[in-house]
Structure formats: C-alpha cells, structure tokens
Amino acid sequence: MLKTVPMFQATDEALLKAISERLKPVTYTDGMYIIKKDEPLQLMFFVLAGYVVTESYPHFVVRIGEFCGQELLDWPSTTSFPMEIPTAFESARANGDVTVLALMLEDWVSVVNRFAFGNHKRRIKLALEKKSKELDSWLFKSGIPSRRKNEIMERVGQELEEYRDVDVENVLPILPVELQSYIKSCLPITRLKKVPMLRSVDEEVLRAICEHMKPIKYTNISGRVYLSRDGEPLEKMIFIVEGDLGVERRNVAGRDLLYPGDFYEEELVHWVSVSHTSFPARLPLSVDSAYVTNNDSILLMADDLKSVVSKFRLHFSKEITLPPDTQPELLISFQLTMLKKNCQIEGR
Image (tube, rainbow, N blue to C red; front, side):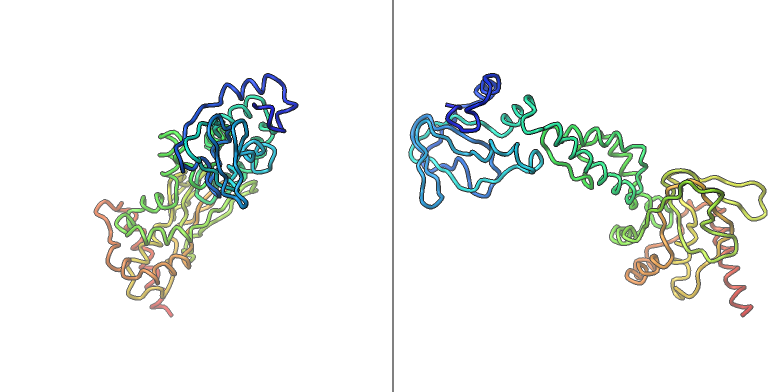
C-alpha cells in the first residue's frame, strides 16, 4: 500500500517498514471530518473500508487502497519544516462508516528524525542559529545576564528536536523552575519593585516605566567611564546587570562597589515624589560620583521618568511615600541633594 505513494516507490525497505509500523487503524462514522481545510494537517491516511469524499471542487472520492494527505509527506522537503506544520488545502469527510490506516503527524516526525529525512539535522542547526540571535537580543534588552544563555539554549534545542517552535520572548514555560525564578528576578519590572520608593506603585505605572528603561553595555574600555559626577545634575538611575559599579563618596577615602542586582541614584525617584508639586522644575544634584569599566546596565533616564510622571501624576503624588525601612543614609543623601538645589535657587 505504501508503494502506491509516488515518493515511496524508490524508498528502501527499512524506511517503509518504519512507516508501516506506525500506521494505525481509525474508524469514522458518516459525515465525520478526517481532515479540515485550512487547519493544521495532523495525518495522512489510506482507506481500508468505505470511502471518503473530499470537499474540493469538483468533489473527489477516495476509495479503498487510495490515500489522502500527501502534503504531510511532502512537508520535510519544504523550507517550513520542521517549525511550521502544513495546513490542509481541502477537507475530507467520511461517506458512511469508514476505516482508514492513519499516519499521524507525530509518528511521521519520529520517522523523519530517525532517518534524517529532509535534512532534519541541518534544519535544526539553522533554527538554533536563528534562535540564538533572537535570544541574545531578548536577554540584553530584558537585563538578563548572558551567562545563563547556554542553559536556555539547551532547552530551546530540545524543543526544536521535538518539532515544537519556541518564542524566545516567552521562553519561561519550557525552563526549569529555578531558571524561571532567576530570569523573573532579572526582568526590569522586578528590578523596579526592589526600589523601596516604588514598592507600592501600581503595576500599570511600573510597566510604563519599563518601556523607557534602556540596556547599555560598556566593554573593552580603557580607564573609567563616569555615569554621574558629584555636584552635577542627576540624569539617570542605574540598574546593574553584569559587572560592577564603582562609587566614590564625597569626603570618604576609597570607593564602594555595587554588584549585579543593585541599583544606584534612587534619589531620582525621591525627587519625583517629594517635589511633585513643583515638578519638573530642576533636576536634583548627585552627591557622589559613579563609574564603570566593564559593565552591563539598564538605565532609566530622568527625562523618560518625567514623561511617565506626567502621564501618571496622580499615582506619584498619592502612592509614593518614604517606606518605614528606608535606609538612613539614603534619606541623608536625598536631604543633601534638596539642600544643594535650594541653595542654588537662592543664589540666583
């Protein structure tokens, strides 16, 4: 029966045997659809008893010993294989009681995989290369350290081997629980929720802020790149992804180091909340200097925060308050910033 299919007429016996072992008898009653037009094609079949009518025009009758669903067999030789399941170009339904021998999609896939039919390995390799580039972009813009990429790609590869496509921007469901938790902890909205002043802010506002957060990479730098300097306007808040951030405190010898997961210049959020009645009159001033050498960070620029505050002003005036556990040094830092700002205004 298999050799009535043109593509199998010159096929070796081992492949035919593998296919025949996967053929399953299935019975349909009168009027039942075996294949539906424009839906993913889940099987091809040979008629064993009764007959099947296709709904193309003119109608075509599939009789005992004949087959239907050739598109499934042709699939491995197309560019859509293995990621896009072919769709049926016509419907086929039982006319009376019908028994067919069905080759299901998953069984055909296993045969293709076993016999490397349709250059399966090459296609998987090309698909992995494409997904790798997509994943690089998503990791960078989402603030997820690249060192976890290999773990993610291992799972992506397993999915592709099973002929399941992967959306890299929705990759969490296929990952182990531990890795899911880690990635969630790195996402911009989670980073914002770690800022004490933003813990009580509505999720809608946080998502609006996330849209303005910009990833940036500092690599192969000779010397230091200063992201803020003591006494200059505070233009950005910094969330550290990889590497570290050096902070030179005023009147303090040496330096402090901040690490992945830390953030810097929270005073920018204090400025928005505390001075909201006159916002955005003047940027606060930085009370220390911060620099990087090799570092990946996510930046929230003051101008972008202004645009969000303008849209959600009521949220910022009502919801943002200094939490009880705010660190004393952060309060002092902010008070110094506001004092310098007021002195500058008085001296004008």
